[in-house]
Length: 205
Image 1: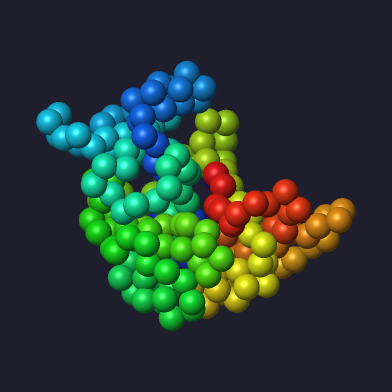
Image 2: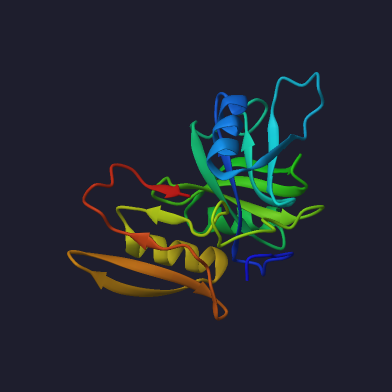
């Protein structure tokens, strides 16, 4: 199903690009995917927060780093739906991760936090508010999967299992392996893989 209005807790629900030149980025994605951007920030704000839509439905955001927690830029961030961003941040620290940016109410209509797993891979959590996540997925021009590249798949399995209750199914793929995470029978669309080309842990859109 391409059209979505809600996500269960523990399921990735949103993606956002944090870039130094958001106007250039939204122009690029408009041409590439046909996205329709709307800047949610006041006209006099130095920060930019573009909500991007496809056929009128939310698909992603493009942000400037101004006034936001300090992730490295440029980057694509994956957001995972939670009942409480504050509780999720506490679970992350209890499991050995790091709170990079404390929970805050984002212009995109949710309460979010910027977090890192023990290997240093950044991700975000999304407590639904006015918006519940991407309203169009799994079709051309819309987000369909996020992938974690990590040097420590076993550590990732333990960490994300503790934080989100994810179960893991691991498969051999040639000379490497891939893990598909799932929550309560729903695919969490977040595979982790061990790759000899991985230079640093990261979530990729």
